[in-house]
Length: 467
Image 1 (spheres, one colour):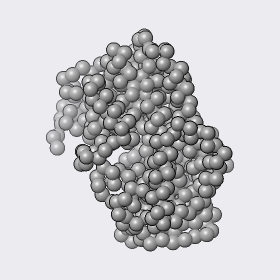
Image 2 (cartoon, helix red, strand yellow; image 1 turned 90 degrees about the horizontal axis):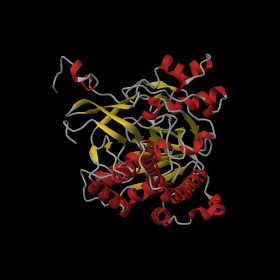
Image 3 (cartoon, helix red, strand yellow; image 1 turned 180 degrees about the horizontal axis):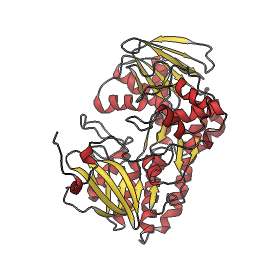
Image 4 (spheres, one colour; image 1 turned 45 degrees about the vertical axis):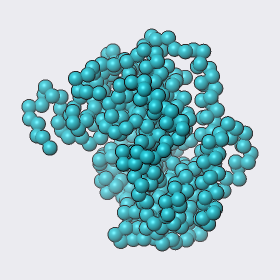
């Protein structure tokens, strides 16, 4: 899309992953003008990520088909572009975007579909800020799309299927996986729920293949344990694991620790607009309230895919279609009602699989207190420690907003994307209040750090310094 193209659209889709592409394709089929905006240089999202450095990386057959269809459809897209603000207007929405070569721009649409996906859920412990401690999603991207191993002696800590997939890629790349630490107990309970796996051949093959690779390599798996601390000087050199109460500890010599405690929905834009959210542990945290068309509590705003709750690629593809139909329906277009019932039935089946995985690998700290020491850094942007948050809470503070005002936790570059959920869990632990009853983080523009000239509208900007 060039700067002189239209800025007014029927629907703007934010996010070019599975949900966003599916939504845009349906809108295009129904004859509506749709624009897809994404911060990445290429469409695909995290599930079907394309690599500029390694174009030979092979996507799944499903991913290749979707990307090919998306390219052939000619859906308008604005890549490498940050959406930093959204303003509801009387008859639509103004979307503020920044693209380094174009500067500040304002787009307008009658409806919005937010499909911004998810990001790795951080967990604090002493030493988590050492070089060499990284998130599982980032490590997987390094291996698959950059051809770089994150380390040579790697310990995987967390819970859930991504750990097993990452371990397999590490082993195939030549790294030594010194151990896998899973906070969940061994999944004996899966036997009682095997019927949910019907029709999940792709997932079963991937999971069993990863498990077989780990067994062949002799990687020890430590069930029901977490990482207690990482130690080192210039980088991580040792990692200590144990039960959440600090017993049964073991130490490993490592140069890398990968954390995989699941994901959090990236729905900050929906919160910025004012859509109602509620806390759902099984879906990854705060999620928007939606109707059967994926429409939020604000008319014309739809959220689809992992941004609405962590349920995986298959749910994202289906919800993208449903949100596209919902937006078209909101704008008065005819939607394929004969396909809606079948899609919703498939959606229920895929959502059941997502619930099953959370049942087997729940986020542990929704159920047990954080076993974290006072001196641990909680907000890495502002270097706020756990003791700082606990101190103000013990003085009577009971809201995330007041903790932020008094400690600056969440006021740094990431705007609380890393620490807001952590602060809420500390609040819950200290006050005895369920996390679900603590008001979630408020979001204000700009959502991302951008240059001043990227915020000021051109007609108001009388000085601009070129880089």
